[in-house]
Amino acid sequence: MKAQEIRTLSTGEVETRLNDAEEEFFNLRAQFVIGQLENFNRLTELKRDIARLKTILRERELAAETTHTEQQA
Image 1 (tube, rainbow, N blue to C red):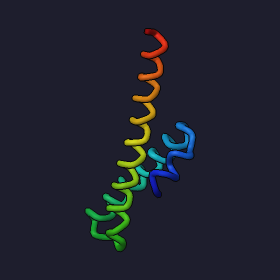
Image 2 (image 1 turned 90 degrees about the vertical axis):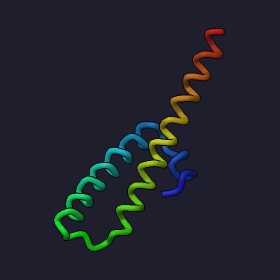
Image 3 (image 1 turned 180 degrees about the horizontal axis):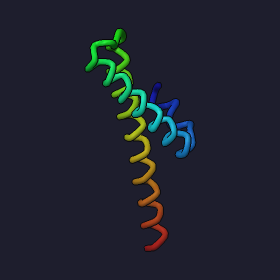
């Protein structure tokens, strides 16, 4: 998933995708520990997707804070 694709989603959709990605990462990590994981690249992909999702959520938080602060001044 690319950052540009994520930016087109609403905040609620981004949060849902983040929760889904974190859950999938947890399950894949468990498979890795047990030795059942076949596609190791998926772990790396998910880690990067989670980071992108969190980054974009944080960008939106900061933008909202900036807007809120400017309105108070």
